[in-house]
Length: 301
Image (cartoon, rainbow, N blue to C red; front, side, top):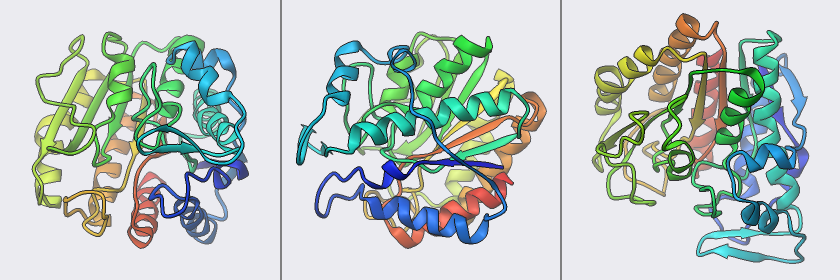
């Protein structure tokens, strides 16, 4: 297993008491160094401008890469400091490097321990704590540079990945599969949002537990991933559906994240030669985040 990260991802700081704090990544990295010291640890490179422009408008790329001093607000809950543009480049670049490593046969599984997260960033706007859509950058790179025809993105973050969906809404080579809590930011991802037939959204009502989560995936979404037969499987790995997380009202445990990860590993083995790329998204209770990421990586491995 390859683990990508970069020191700049700890320096992006959206401000005092902001939930998407550097402490999130620090607790993840501490846990991974303690439990996966023998993994293939690699420093994430920076994404190139052309890689970002496959999925984002030039105006947004320019806005994110513009130097700032102090704290600068992009939208109501998305802030950047002087290190954020470098962190965003390396967060996006981690997925690109992971795609190359997997497609070149260097390993079968890669995890990107990076921030800021990405799945809310739309083609034209940074939002929801996200600057660039890291998983979308990686998927678009896989299409363009490795000639893939079927890339699956699985998103079990408690919030819908509206940015990822918007980027690929008319791209049938990328299929998007998501469970997310009903009535929660960003208030998108209804089951009737189908795009080019490549969007698969399932709502979980507040209070849903692991039993409901597993049934929805087993009965609805995993069979659709299987039918798509992806050549590369990508995961937007958000852990804010954990019962302890303050940002939502689902009741998952770490074992539920291990279960879905193991199921996705089997599908990657069946269709993609085992190639599976996972990228950190949400998760805001530090203890729950640590426990959930460890469960996820043990199942990945």
